Length: 185
Image (spheres, rainbow, N blue to C red):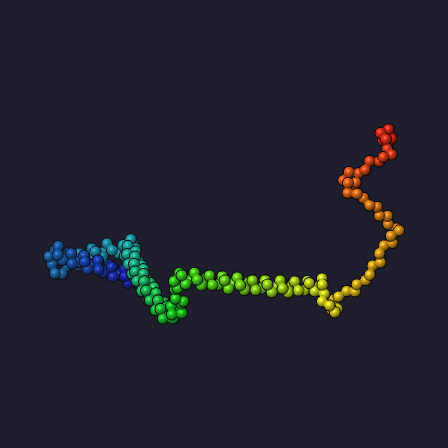
Protein backbone atom coordinates (compact mmCIF):
# COMPACT_ATOMS: atom_id res chain seq x y z
CA UNK A 1 0.00 0.00 0.00
CA UNK A 2 2.81 2.40 0.91
CA UNK A 3 4.63 1.58 -2.37
CA UNK A 4 1.54 2.27 -4.45
CA UNK A 5 0.97 5.60 -2.74
CA UNK A 6 4.68 6.55 -3.08
CA UNK A 7 4.63 5.72 -6.80
CA UNK A 8 1.44 7.75 -7.24
CA UNK A 9 3.13 10.71 -5.52
CA UNK A 10 6.15 10.32 -7.83
CA UNK A 11 3.90 10.18 -10.92
CA UNK A 12 1.83 13.18 -9.79
CA UNK A 13 5.00 15.20 -9.24
CA UNK A 14 6.35 14.08 -12.65
CA UNK A 15 3.14 15.13 -14.41
CA UNK A 16 3.24 18.50 -12.65
CA UNK A 17 6.92 18.96 -13.67
CA UNK A 18 6.17 18.10 -17.32
CA UNK A 19 3.21 20.54 -17.45
CA UNK A 20 5.32 23.33 -15.90
CA UNK A 21 8.14 22.70 -18.39
CA UNK A 22 5.70 22.71 -21.32
CA UNK A 23 4.46 26.13 -20.23
CA UNK A 24 7.97 27.47 -19.68
CA UNK A 25 9.28 26.18 -23.04
CA UNK A 26 5.96 26.81 -24.78
CA UNK A 27 5.87 23.41 -26.45
CA UNK A 28 3.27 20.65 -26.66
CA UNK A 29 5.78 17.79 -26.40
CA UNK A 30 8.84 17.97 -24.17
CA UNK A 31 12.16 16.72 -25.37
CA UNK A 32 13.25 13.44 -23.76
CA UNK A 33 16.29 15.08 -22.11
CA UNK A 34 14.03 17.37 -20.00
CA UNK A 35 11.96 14.41 -18.82
CA UNK A 36 15.16 12.42 -18.13
CA UNK A 37 16.43 15.32 -16.00
CA UNK A 38 13.44 14.89 -13.66
CA UNK A 39 13.80 11.11 -13.50
CA UNK A 40 17.53 11.19 -12.75
CA UNK A 41 17.05 13.48 -9.76
CA UNK A 42 14.32 11.28 -8.29
CA UNK A 43 15.99 7.86 -8.53
CA UNK A 44 18.34 8.39 -5.57
CA UNK A 45 17.86 6.56 -2.27
CA UNK A 46 17.12 9.84 -0.49
CA UNK A 47 14.38 10.71 -2.95
CA UNK A 48 12.81 7.24 -2.65
CA UNK A 49 12.83 7.55 1.18
CA UNK A 50 11.21 10.97 0.80
CA UNK A 51 8.33 9.51 -1.24
CA UNK A 52 8.02 6.59 1.15
CA UNK A 53 7.79 8.93 4.19
CA UNK A 54 5.16 11.05 2.45
CA UNK A 55 3.17 7.91 1.53
CA UNK A 56 3.32 6.59 5.10
CA UNK A 57 2.15 9.90 6.53
CA UNK A 58 -0.72 10.07 4.00
CA UNK A 59 -1.73 6.49 4.78
CA UNK A 60 -1.49 7.07 8.51
CA UNK A 61 -3.60 10.22 8.23
CA UNK A 62 -6.17 8.35 6.16
CA UNK A 63 -6.34 5.41 8.55
CA UNK A 64 -6.37 7.68 11.61
CA UNK A 65 -9.04 9.91 10.13
CA UNK A 66 -11.08 6.94 9.02
CA UNK A 67 -10.71 5.34 12.43
CA UNK A 68 -11.75 8.56 14.16
CA UNK A 69 -14.75 8.89 11.85
CA UNK A 70 -15.65 5.24 12.32
CA UNK A 71 -15.25 5.37 16.08
CA UNK A 72 -17.45 8.48 16.33
CA UNK A 73 -20.05 6.79 14.15
CA UNK A 74 -19.93 3.56 16.20
CA UNK A 75 -20.14 5.47 19.50
CA UNK A 76 -23.08 7.47 18.18
CA UNK A 77 -24.90 4.32 17.03
CA UNK A 78 -24.29 2.46 20.29
CA UNK A 79 -25.43 5.48 22.32
CA UNK A 80 -28.62 5.78 20.28
CA UNK A 81 -29.37 2.06 20.62
CA UNK A 82 -28.77 2.11 24.38
CA UNK A 83 -30.99 5.16 24.78
CA UNK A 84 -33.78 3.51 22.79
CA UNK A 85 -33.39 0.30 24.82
CA UNK A 86 -33.52 2.21 28.11
CA UNK A 87 -36.56 4.21 27.02
CA UNK A 88 -38.40 1.09 25.86
CA UNK A 89 -37.43 -1.46 28.52
CA UNK A 90 -35.91 0.08 31.63
CA UNK A 91 -37.63 3.43 32.26
CA UNK A 92 -41.16 1.99 32.45
CA UNK A 93 -40.03 -0.31 35.30
CA UNK A 94 -38.46 2.47 37.39
CA UNK A 95 -40.51 3.85 40.28
CA UNK A 96 -42.00 7.29 39.77
CA UNK A 97 -40.58 10.11 41.83
CA UNK A 98 -42.77 10.98 44.79
CA UNK A 99 -43.12 14.47 46.22
CA UNK A 100 -41.16 15.23 49.39
CA UNK A 101 -44.17 15.41 51.68
CA UNK A 102 -45.20 11.85 50.74
CA UNK A 103 -41.70 10.58 51.52
CA UNK A 104 -41.80 12.39 54.88
CA UNK A 105 -45.13 10.90 56.00
CA UNK A 106 -44.12 7.49 54.70
CA UNK A 107 -41.02 7.69 56.89
CA UNK A 108 -43.06 8.77 59.92
CA UNK A 109 -45.48 5.88 59.42
CA UNK A 110 -42.63 3.39 59.05
CA UNK A 111 -41.03 4.68 62.26
CA UNK A 112 -44.27 4.35 64.22
CA UNK A 113 -44.93 0.81 62.98
CA UNK A 114 -41.34 -0.15 63.81
CA UNK A 115 -41.63 1.34 67.29
CA UNK A 116 -44.87 -0.54 68.06
CA UNK A 117 -43.45 -3.79 66.68
CA UNK A 118 -40.32 -3.44 68.82
CA UNK A 119 -42.41 -2.62 71.92
CA UNK A 120 -44.54 -5.73 71.30
CA UNK A 121 -41.44 -7.93 70.97
CA UNK A 122 -39.90 -6.51 74.16
CA UNK A 123 -43.22 -6.94 76.03
CA UNK A 124 -43.39 -10.59 74.91
CA UNK A 125 -39.82 -11.29 76.02
CA UNK A 126 -40.33 -9.61 79.41
CA UNK A 127 -43.59 -11.52 79.97
CA UNK A 128 -42.03 -14.89 79.20
CA UNK A 129 -38.91 -14.23 81.27
CA UNK A 130 -40.83 -12.87 84.27
CA UNK A 131 -43.27 -15.80 84.24
CA UNK A 132 -40.45 -18.32 84.05
CA UNK A 133 -38.51 -16.60 86.83
CA UNK A 134 -41.58 -16.25 89.07
CA UNK A 135 -42.41 -19.96 88.73
CA UNK A 136 -38.85 -20.87 89.74
CA UNK A 137 -38.98 -18.67 92.83
CA UNK A 138 -42.66 -19.15 93.74
CA UNK A 139 -43.89 -22.37 92.13
CA UNK A 140 -47.68 -22.68 91.78
CA UNK A 141 -49.60 -24.82 94.29
CA UNK A 142 -49.42 -28.53 93.53
CA UNK A 143 -46.50 -28.10 91.13
CA UNK A 144 -43.69 -30.62 91.06
CA UNK A 145 -41.29 -27.70 91.46
CA UNK A 146 -42.72 -26.92 94.89
CA UNK A 147 -40.27 -27.87 97.65
CA UNK A 148 -41.07 -29.48 100.97
CA UNK A 149 -41.04 -27.25 103.96
CA UNK A 150 -39.08 -28.63 106.87
CA UNK A 151 -39.57 -27.34 110.40
CA UNK A 152 -36.39 -26.22 112.05
CA UNK A 153 -36.44 -26.71 115.84
CA UNK A 154 -35.66 -23.66 117.92
CA UNK A 155 -32.29 -23.38 119.58
CA UNK A 156 -32.17 -24.29 123.29
CA UNK A 157 -32.61 -21.25 125.52
CA UNK A 158 -30.14 -22.29 128.19
CA UNK A 159 -27.23 -22.39 125.75
CA UNK A 160 -27.65 -18.76 124.88
CA UNK A 161 -27.36 -15.86 127.24
CA UNK A 162 -29.49 -12.99 126.31
CA UNK A 163 -28.54 -9.76 127.90
CA UNK A 164 -30.51 -6.67 127.50
CA UNK A 165 -28.47 -3.70 126.44
CA UNK A 166 -29.68 -0.20 126.75
CA UNK A 167 -29.30 1.98 123.65
CA UNK A 168 -27.19 4.51 125.56
CA UNK A 169 -24.66 1.82 126.35
CA UNK A 170 -24.16 1.01 122.72
CA UNK A 171 -23.30 4.60 121.92
CA UNK A 172 -21.23 5.33 125.02
CA UNK A 173 -20.14 2.28 127.03
CA UNK A 174 -20.77 2.38 130.77
CA UNK A 175 -17.88 3.21 133.03
CA UNK A 176 -16.74 0.47 135.28
CA UNK A 177 -17.70 1.55 138.77
CA UNK A 178 -15.05 -0.62 140.41
CA UNK A 179 -12.17 1.02 138.62
CA UNK A 180 -10.36 3.89 140.20
CA UNK A 181 -7.81 6.11 138.60
CA UNK A 182 -4.99 4.30 140.32
CA UNK A 183 -6.27 0.93 139.08
CA UNK A 184 -6.09 2.07 135.50
CA UNK A 185 -2.33 2.29 135.64
